[in-house]
Amino acid sequence: MQKAGMLSILLALQFTLFGQTASKSWMLSDYQKDGTPGISAEKAYQLLSGKTPKKVVVAVIDSGVDILHEDLKDVIWVNKGEIPGNGKDDDGNGYVDDIHGWNFIGGKDGSHVNHDTYEITRIYVRLKKKYDGKTAANVDKKDKKEFEFYEKIKSEIQKKIQEYTTEKESLQYLIDDFRNTEKILQEQYGVKEINSETLSSIKSSDEKLQTSILTLNMIMMLTGSSDFNQLIKSLEGAVQYYNDALNYGYNENFDPRSIVGDNYENSSERYYGNNDVKGPDPSHGTHVAGIIAAKRGNGIGMDGIADNVEIMVLRVVPNGDERDKDVANGIRYAADNGAKVINMSFGKKYFHDKAVVDEAIRYAESKGVLMIHAGGNEAEDIDKEQFYPTRKLQKGSAKNWLEIGALNWKPAPEMVGSFSNYGQKNLDLFAPGVDIYSTYPEQQYEFQQGTSIAAPVVSGVAAVLFSYFHDLKAADIKKAILSSVQKFHGTQVIKPGTEQMVDFKTLSSTGGVVNLHKAVEACMKMSKAK
Image (cartoon, rainbow, N blue to C red; front, side, top):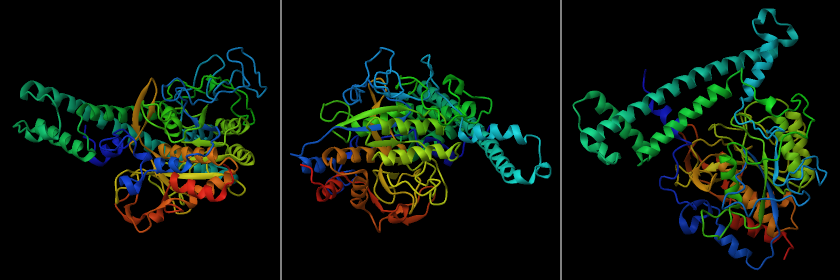
């Protein structure tokens, strides 16, 4: 067994080591005052003093939310048209006892889809029935293009399975090796706390032990980790990611959809699922919700961005790829039940039924809803690589859409998240998305990162603007956000996924970072609200 390469280790850890030196509230900070490019929340609320806000509903389409969390329980949307627990659809919207939203990946019996496959796997399974065992020579001419696509995704899946199997085994080797080293250092060298200082002081004639010490020390220094147990936990998290991908994501024999009990091929079907909006793993959605709306000023945990907001919970995203039918229904539910902002911290590279999602996006646009979408974590140029859902519809483009990249708290050249997608045309702006501290299930708080963490920062900003400038429409709010970004034109940064230095302005259409204070100033010029 060969040890994992250093680059592979760092990539595996990029989403699991958080908050080494970042402030827990840096997303709210002011660049001029604090030196970190947060949203200038305090200055914004000073400007808003004396204005009368209105409640704004933000729909979080995600993995579910812990609605009893101490910092969220007071800001969860309540459907006043429903009588809790009576088993009836009191408001006639088609959903029974939808008190706080809806779970589109749950069964009538209260069960849940937790893991699911990736969309590429589902497409492969469907095409395999048609093309398994065939070659280009014996495929009908009309099917040539589809067959070539089948061969492409088949190869991609096989490559990923091989790659992930190797990475998983390599990381597990490191974990076992490091645990063994820990035991030796404790028993033979009396080491109580493993850190870079203690590791550097150990000199052993045992070549294998010395190699392990050097490798461990190098990883801890490169990742900025001072906590051995946290490093091991992060490595184990990376192994779990690979296990989930292999056991579920790329597993062609796994299909949990029967739990839901719908006719999956009928994309127009809307009324299925259950009302348990927490689900089995609400960690991601809970973190997202806290960024937007965690109770401000209550002296516990952390402060969210918006102070007059209610979170509508729509459980659509499993541990795997979301399904288009569910995404469309989540969007429609939000639009029909009063949401002004929809946060979508998810995405994938392939689609099953783009048309049904496009129709839902158009529907939300007709209802005056602003849609905020995470740009993706593949360190790719989305002007060249397509991810779904997208503002690019089958006909035209959604006008009620913002695409968000992840900003780091570190100064240039590291101010862009190393994982963040980018695009001078298709990515609108950046927002804080690295080492963001927010709510986590069971009264916990955690650091997380990703464009899926940056998107709710913008959703929180949009919610504040809708709340205090209630005469403005979605188009006005979008314009205010885009026109008021904190610009960093001329700042040289590392282009994600490369070692290349580029001007920050080339990574998005605005070349800027969302700023609540400046957006409030922009809205003040447009609004007549008191």
